[in-house]
Length: 328
Figure 1 (cartoon, rainbow, N blue to C red):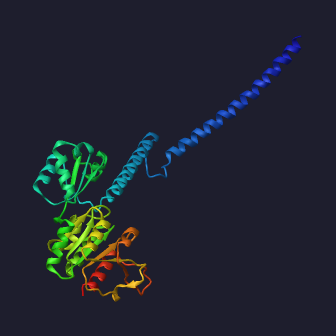
Figure 2 (figure 1 turned 45 degrees about the vertical axis):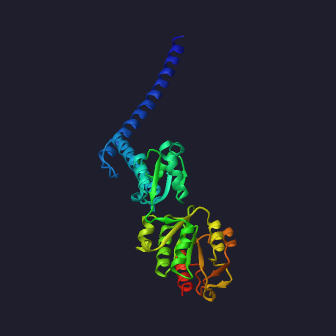
Figure 3 (figure 1 turned 90 degrees about the horizontal axis):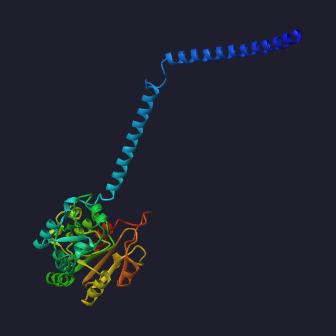
């Protein structure tokens, strides 16, 4: 019995010995790894940043915040680029400031207001009167006015002043006939770029046209940019803002004017056109040209023949060439 017990005991001690060997080897490997890690920590790191892990995480968060901030700044710049043509010097906002401007009779290009302001006692009659004079009064939301004024305290109303007084169409027709036997009027259809509008006004005044007709919608108003590009032509040229362009063309035809439209798809050349009669020259936008409905009100459609590979001309350049030829 003693031998068997000793045998069992001896077997158990051998297993313990093997386990002790495995533990010793594992502890040696662990010690070796710790020594390697200490050596690596003593070496200077390859990264530019020197510090512990917490500092590195803090710096990475800061860099993320900075990059996020710059991305927000880029977004703001992109949003501001939408209003590159909007010069805030042309705008007046706030109830008292707008009311004083309306009562003074200063020329106004456009008005934006909320439904509450439009129906109020102070502004209802004034806005109705100024709309009858040809000024576009647009009812919009509060956020839209904030977008136009770039976050100013507008109190629900803002307006854009005009750099010249506009005339009713009837007054423009009578005034043009007093000065010339065969007056020429320029009508713009859908030209929203203020640089083009200013350049056309400058050419129209330089070649002796009697006036320019602008629709209230889908057209740039007489803003500061238009005034600068026109280079003083607004002081010597009459401008009329009309509600309905096609109805105004029909009115001009009834008064004896011949309506001529510029179109790159027309068959007749502008150089072969010679009519000694009061004229209305209709100029469309660069992209769409004259609208199809407006073309039906034109007595003639003319084109400027091009020799080169360029398919079309800038609207103001085409207008200058056409006005120069038809005013001879």
